Image (cartoon, rainbow over all chains, first blue to last red; front, side):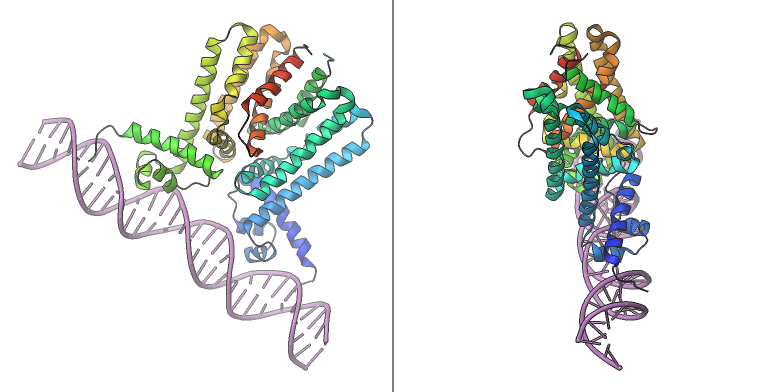
Length: 192
Length: 192
DNA sequence: ATTTTTGTTGATTGACGAGTCAATAAACTT
DNA sequence: AAGTTTATTGACTCGTCAATCAACAAAAAT
């Protein structure tokens, strides 16, 4: 009994299912059938809405990046003062949501995807540039000419702390990650 | 014309070919045939020496970790003074060899492998513990009680800088990575 | 009322790939 | 010389999976 206007609903369900499955399996070795099943439809329908598995992956990646972008933007809007802005970015980057099994798995594997799929590489590069630009902008009033260098360090540190979480068996600890990043920031600002 | 004592030679060739292929393809989606071909033998022989593809991956991972460990140990032996030891670890971590396409690809994908293969996870955890222990030990005389925290940050930073290199199209720049890490160190030691 | 568009799936195709096996050959052992 | 161990591969099995297709159903348009 086909209701109309299913396309966006189906696509959305597929994108979310893709992320969950990648996180569950821990790699991109997920079949379209697995994803479709979790999204409550046949694999044929998945192929109908997305032309290929790769398109599904890319859509999932855009979704994760969009969520993250929105989180950062929201945190920035509510922040006050230069330092508040930097801390807002850090808090958004290490929010509990970003440390959920699926999110971390998704990021990790999108990195791998970027190795072989140019469009994935492009998307990641855009995200990295934006993150760094945000950091640099927020740091300018605090660190002047050194803002760029500090932003580079902070950006890498954020990614590195992500990686750490992957290896831990227990529940991820975003607070600890924030603490490390804030320490670095304080050190760079000469407040030790 | 089978010469005897081929086993170690074949295994070695396979391990190296595995790393190269993973780096070339950019994911773990390499076939045993590809690896075997690059190593100059049939896929059947690869299966003969390693029981399975997974065993091949694990052997390759051990190889990479062993190389890195040896590099760090060598650099430490030649270092003088506490700060020299920290810098030695950084230099070893960001040596040109570790930034070659294959090496970076290998590391990235071993991280993914660790998600689904417990033995891989164990190996990576051992490496991480050792790196951190080395850093902490070297930092103790410089930072006292804060050595642990700083080591945690530096360890994550090292991994994060790796990730950055993956996205860059041009040749990797180890020197820039070292510079960022050293900045972090200097900042934490309050020498800005 | 019938044609078109949208939604949906079971069944199928076609390719590919991990792992096995039988067979062959050269070296070592007795 | 006969037998054993090691090296090696082509051919094969068996499974999996992305992508396609034919067919069916319901809403919209004509």
